[in-house]
Amino acid sequence: MTNLWEETMRMLVAHGKTFEDVKYIQGSNFGITKENFERVAKKSDYDSGFGAARVAEDLVVVGDNWWIERHEYDGNEWWEYKEKPKQISEIKEVSHLAGGMWNKLAELNETEVDE
Image (cartoon, rainbow, N blue to C red; front, side):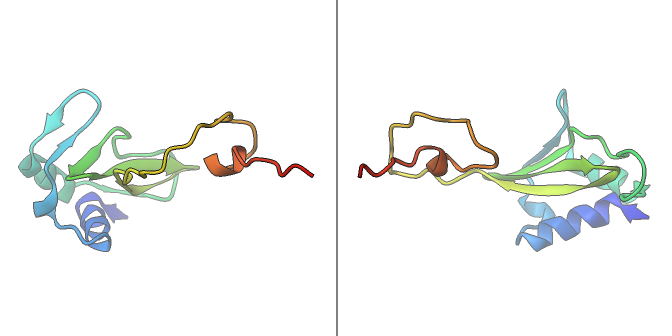
């Protein structure tokens, strides 16, 4: 069994964060207080590796320029840590945004060398 509070704290610590760093917690339609989240998460036990996801799939815990969100695959569920990407100063004109499989933007827009 997995406890949601303990899982959340492990994820925060793994990324150098504490619960004090959390600014707000919400789903798609409404927010909840940090105190309410802590109280309910501490009593929320679930099997994170079997069957369907049990924790609300739209639950996010948000800090300054980072957040954790729920993910699920084949019955396994977990928090995934995200950070706001740092803006790159170099700007290029592109001709492709799609076309290959698992390509990066630069790979899709490499210029061919004239021979």
